[in-house]
Image: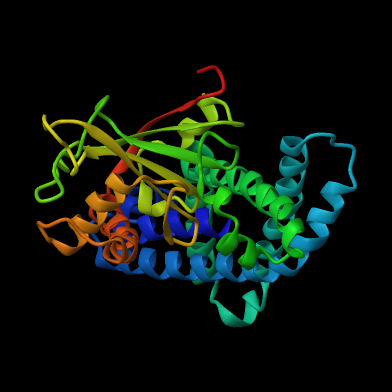
Length: 321
């Protein structure tokens, strides 16, 4: 809820919601007082919503426990119940924040403007719930990822950090629940030579499993850097060790985890590592094994940084592929 309202308020403060506010308040749009009142009301509403979200956080554990103890027998049902309980807690806390010291802190007109700002924000959420849907979808995919990590961590004494560092299978994102496979939008697209890679592919498309296509499309048009999910990038590049004919392609695949850390896919070949390491260093000669191992991860990070602002425009479920 906090992330959703934060996005709406940020847009609202940029005057995207000014017309609705002025209409509800019965103010003249050209009047500077109206604009000033709007700015004040949006900031004040933001503080109330943020305060309510923070106040409700301690209840999240009990809400999850209540959902797990309920009669839902599947992950989706349990997640939906936990979210329903948490939203109820946050809404109640936000209402308390609005009412807190209202009579002594605000004059009647200021309180009215604050209430109108909150109504504009809530109305926008109900009429254009895409931001909310996106966060719910991200949350469910993350839940499947965390579930997978928790199972793997049992082998490492429950230590998730150790599991991430030592279990290379976790960085192989080959169509498993809890991650997205991200590809350049052009089919069979190759980045070409490491010296002058072709990064003009435009946008990305992605596949996911465990979530249907309609739900996945809630993430559409979001830059990859803004998706707090495990993303497996599928880039094809020109084999730097071609023998007779140029044009042979190898897979330079890597994974970016929710924290933003980039890791090479498990089992990546020598040719792909040579390409990534050469892309990082700019060296035209064949690299040594040590140079390759040291610089290939940095090359993957560099490639991610160069393309992370591009959105995923199309997503689909891959269970039937």
